[in-house]
Length: 239
Image 1 (tube, rainbow, N blue to C red):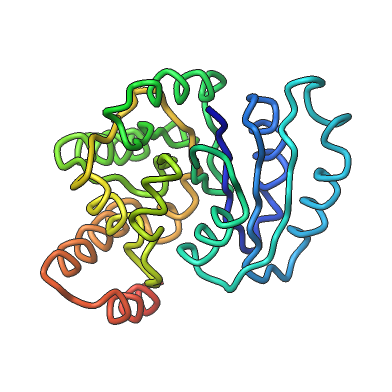
Image 2 (image 1 turned 180 degrees about the vertical axis):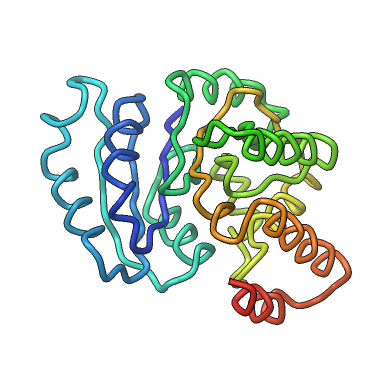
């Protein structure tokens, strides 16, 4: 089975280089970086690594890197990346998230079971503090209990299933919730306990407690039927 890693980016110059260097050494068949109109050095960093990947990354296991442009929006960017790849499965990775060293082996093992249509990883934050551990614990517990995953957890899915579902819905928020909701209706999602490590920066901006309250409020309103476009306005006001 071939697997593509798809990374949507927008002004991620602080972290994209490290993410590509690490991910490129894990043995995936390709990495597709989808830029949504960055105005910082993100594009030049990706272009440099794409040209130099055989030398910069680990020889014989380095994944080829491609950069494409797409309209801004995580759902649009992820769909655009998937549309350019002919791999058998896709893994959608945030630019500030690091996969475990055995991620490729974990996906090969999981997707060898045809009853799984996709899955996600557990998440851990890069900050060594009580609040970060608490938030990640709650995220993993919520995901395990509900079967719903978020983009922070590095979603992966078989290509034929992704195409059957029509990809991510073109909505400004909750595209990951919507997608996994639809995904679990047609098959099993693997809740891998292997951990990805993601940045705690977003949670620190307004404080973990306030951010948790915001996220839960948004998801509750979405569950109650409030449009993602209205939620985007609320999300923007809070940020």
